[in-house]
Image 1 (cartoon, rainbow over the protein chains, first blue to last red):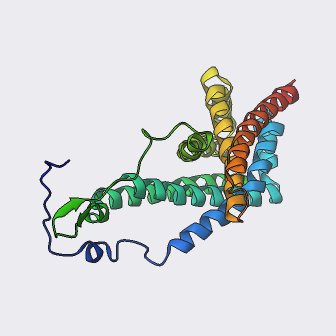
Image 2: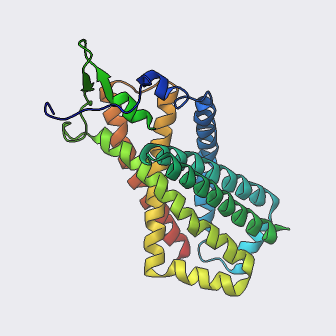
Length: 132
Length: 143
């Protein structure tokens, strides 16, 4: 390390370079919604796992009847919304942590958000198609 | 332009460029349950997002009608399907239990080292317990 040649290619101070790259005054919102969706997912997950266990071996007609019951439709939609929102927030942090290049990071972020939104829509439309 | 690069270089009292010291990382620390559970939370989180593909495909199979539904049920009933579902259940219950641990920390509880480690082992036990309970119950109801 002592023999390493260090160089600085910019005259801007470290502080100047990181200004605007850190907390963009919206970190608290990300943090809060991540917790909010987590709390919502506690009962929703338990309900869903219990439902899947009860539905084990059910015929197509029985599953359709189950899904079309209004409270099941609503809870499924809530589960889909909370799951994909929570997942998108989590993946966002993973992308921010591990992808250094700003361009790749932006591309990965946009692709991830688009994929999560589309998956959520696929799931919600499937539920609504059965229920309505 | 990378914020981390900017912060790695500094100047000493004589104005020479120096690399700032890095804090010790994995190769320095003795293994602890807490570090394993921390990275597992992230791994299971990413895994569960991938696993939502199972949920979406199942919902779409239900919507597609009896034929598509039968195909999906055949897949989920196969050895590979059951294996994937088991991994998904395990990851789900782990992320679920450790998530509740996280929420407790957010409320300011459980920060002393002993509780930290004990709640970690409790999470491991609860994950295995809940997963086995769910599968045994599932098979019992199937008859």
